[in-house]
Amino acid sequence: MGEPKKGKQVSEQENPEAIAKFAQSARSKNGDINRTGISSTSDNSPIPTNPKLKQKAATTVLRENVLGDEEGSEELIKKLPDPILDHHK
Image (cartoon, rainbow, N blue to C red):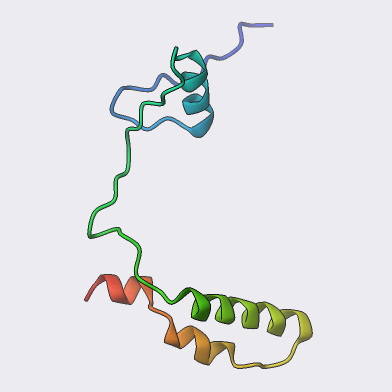
């Protein structure tokens, strides 16, 4: 059989997969990882959400799916911010 295929070479500007990051960290003397890639900006920052309302909506959706009963999840979901609609405001 032929030689095994080598993985894709990754340039400095690309963000390699997680396994490559772990390997890089393991080879480094101090365990630091070169953290290149996505950074948080005002365009991609999280939308503030009430965690209790979010948890209540998620729990209600799961209960409805398990029990097959309508418990008002749609109304709760409508109270949460919409990441797509709110992003374009």
